[in-house]
Amino acid sequence: MSVFNSSALYPRFLLTGLSGLESIYSLISIPIFLVYATSIAGNITILLIIRTEPSLHQPMYYFLSMLALTDLGLSTTTLPTMFSIFWFHAREISFNACLVQMYFIHVFSIIESAVLLAMAFDRFVAIREPLRYVAILTNGVITGIGLAIAGRALALVFPASFLLKRLQYRSVNILSYPFCLHQDLIKTTVSSRRVSSIYGLMVVICSMGLDSVLLLLSYILILGTVLNIASKTERVKALNTCISHICAVLTFYTPMIGLSMIHRYGQNVSPIVHVLMANVYLLVPPLMNPIVYSVKTKQIRDRILKKFKQRKF
Image (cartoon, rainbow, N blue to C red; front, top):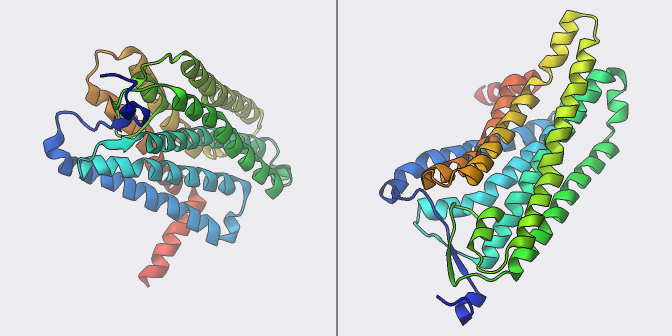
């Protein structure tokens, strides 16, 4: 098929669900719906609890609000195409719509990585300088960090979309996932992808790669600070304040590393495994973060239980 005919000027893309399981998409959609519903309800609950409880208007919970907002954004970005496939068997997506979805998926992923880094910095300050914690992380500082996080993500991903727009594609292109990702779009181009591939790699290194190194450094500093605390009880208490954050970091980075490894070395792996790993990468963190913080953070847990008791009576 010629890439220079008129239809190639407006390429169409076909998303891919779980190949070979189309007959049971209606059943598969049930757990997917429950994951989305739980993710959205959980993150909205976290935001409402923090918004309505003055005692939670502290730096740690402001950063948790940023994480919940990011997870909401990530969930709502992938939701339309997921359900168009599993509910309506509608695979087609226009090029522009695909670029928009790709843009926001990667923006929210980079924001989540940076928010997790900011939360590590928050824990370091809280443990290292407990008496000056609120004085260091003022509302102005937190707002500045939030704007810097969002600005970096928006600026990094925009050129990637622009570069993809300049490439040539076939009139119909089949993608590997039920949503649009940069590395997947690049594979469908019939023109040189060198510049786009190099820029995509630079974005990953300058965002998640850098964040992961700084996260590791932050926890080395936290561990060093904790070991200098004389009281064993205080050491355990300080480390316990990091448990929820460590779980959030592992929930985010473990699927991302797994997806990257399969993408790089799993050419002979079943396409279903690729799709499942991509779904885990994008669906599990928004699902698990509110659950982890609700269970492991006493202040959040107590406020949620209090709200339920008030409604019950």
